[in-house]
Image (cartoon, rainbow, N blue to C red; front, side, top):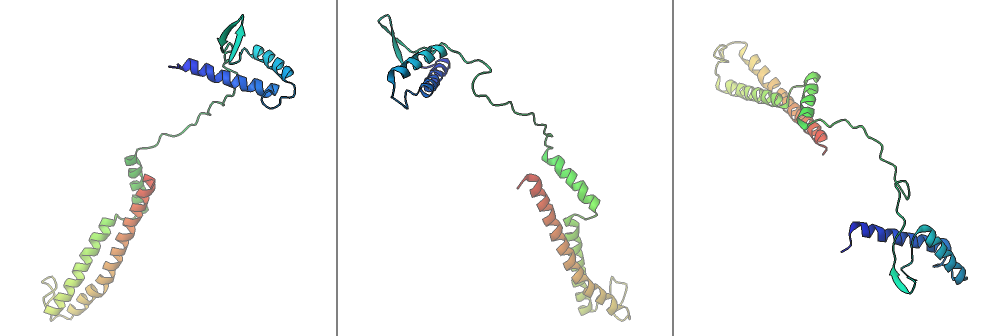
Length: 187
């Protein structure tokens, strides 16, 4: 099993051999084999790298790495620049801030518009039934009064369009709220 140190040494030896080969031209050109091998041997000794095997005194020895990498040598990447990021606020804090901004705009929550739309629609439909069955308005204005038809007419003809407008506002407000929440969630 190869340890990390041994693996690092082996990688450095391969890199050094490639450097020697590229400098001396042993792999690319074979014009002067004696000159190239002499240069390779000299450079190998200068770098402290031996070949895959070499003979010393009749004994065959495997390659060893004598050189060690210093801290400032070799390719290095500059240290990353410190990035000052603001800490991201939690989601509930962002939603509370958004809610405060909406309240300052003067818009009502969509539920209020929906409730008002429902009440106005019920009142206008009830006014139609009151007129059909000739019941007194709020048990105060009898059907024989001259104000009976104008009051019910105002409820019917203004109530239905007002109810539709309030319903539209409720839908618009709910969509704006959903869009702002999607934006906060990053969707």
